[in-house]
Length: 330
Image (cartoon, rainbow, N blue to C red; front, side):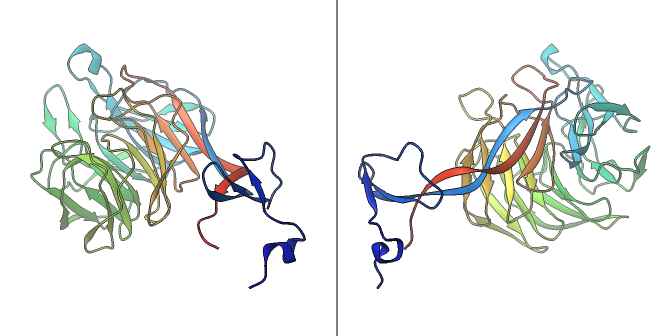
């Protein structure tokens, strides 16, 4: 085997820690941790402030991407000890929100998917009067149109996919994690998920990922969907419900949510198809917010409960930066 010194002309330096400003490609032995370390260029993500929603609310749904998003529905007054559901819809251009035409059916804790100009809204809860919805509506960039209903009315559900090929997942008060597929005309029940509500989802109708949520308590559980069955995989680092999720089933981002015995969290984790890794937190910990984004490198979080209802928007972006990592394989 060729020694490192023969290739590089120098030996690996031993440091009691990490060098203060290592060069790209530099390797050293950290005697404090007993590990080899390397400096490299990698992607580093962070949350920054975006434009505020015009209507403060929690429990809204979202569609689209960070620079072209749609927010719809929500609860205007949970702090008053009740609920005031809304159909308010707003469009985001990457800088500011503009109010557009409302949902036909007012509701909150609903699900959404699709794009800014071709979205789908389904399920949810409204009060007063208290109603658990089956209603499905499509958005054409100007107006909402009511379509065929879900088979099971529910709220706190998750949704992924497009306006013509969607997946509705779990929710309350269904006794199991009812899953339905949408073909652009009708919903069809398929194999159920093993738990109920408050979870996040990423991916497509035939390749989805769900994570977090609650049954008897907030969960770390993660499951993948192959178009037919759910399979449990490695869980989140932080168990929580009412969190946000974007991306694909092999490159997802999970953020925010409720953590037992603690304030709302800003915890953000990325999924690489095998494991979750913790990243930089949301600036404002929150739950029951809307989200948009097609990848784990670019996302939007808006509104929510923090614990008071907020209109704040945050944007997640990843950019190249110098990072230091432990070498685990040689």
